Image (tube, rainbow over all chains, first blue to last red; front, side):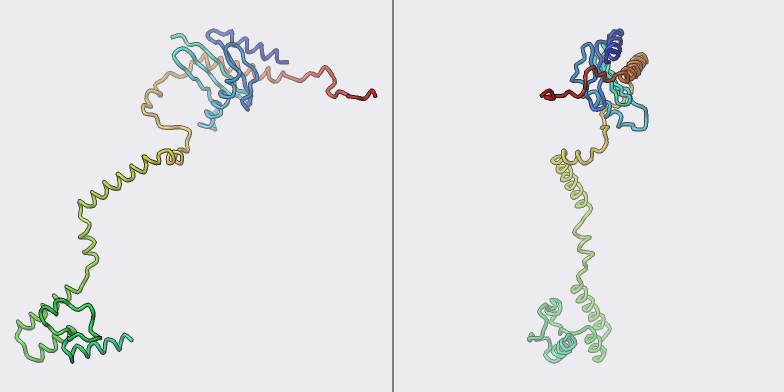
Length: 91
Length: 174
C-alpha cells in the first residue's frame, strides 16, 4: 500500500545533502515524512506553495526555495500533492 | 408693493430734502451725509446742474461726486477674495495642509495600509540585492521534479485492501 511511497521518500533522503522530506495533500494534511522533517510542517509547506502560485496563476507551478546560511527547503506542488525537501547547504 | 415704496421714497427725498422719516433708508450713504448733499438719484444731479447753467467745473465735480458715491456703494466681492489670499498665504496653507495629511496618514497607517494592500507583493527597499541572488540550482530542480513524479506515481498505487468484512454483524446470534 504505502510501501512504495515510503521507499520513494527513503531514496530521496539518501541523496547527498538531503536530510529530510515531507509530502502533503492539497489541504495540507501530511501524507508522509522521512528523515528530519516533521509532519507538522506539511500545512505550512502547502500554504506557501498556494501563495506562490497566486503570484503568477497562469504560469507553471513554481519551485520555492527557502534558504539560510546552511540549510535549504525546496517546495513544489503538482496537482494535489505538495512536496518539500530539506537540504543542507555547504558553502 | 415694491413700486409703491420706491415712489414714496422718491417723493420724500424731493420734498423733505433727506430728513429722516419712517420711509428713509436705514443704511444711509456716508458720502452724502458728510458732504451734506441731498440724498437723491444721480439723474437729479445732472438735471439740476443742467437747469441752473453750471460751469464745467461744477459739472465735473458733480460727476466726480457721483462716481465717488457709486464707488463707495459698490462691494467688489472678487476683489475682496483676491485681497485675502496673497501668494505667501497660499504657500502657508499648502504647508499646513501637507502637515495635516501627514498626521492623518501617520495616525491611520494601519487602517489605510489594510485598504491599499491589495497585492501579495510588497515594495522592498533594496530590490537589486534580491534580483542579484543566484537562481535555484538545476540539480535541485531535477531532484524535486523526480521526487514529485515518483511520489505521484506511488500515491496512485495506494489502494484500500480490505481483508475483513466491512460490515460486521452484531447480535444476530440471538
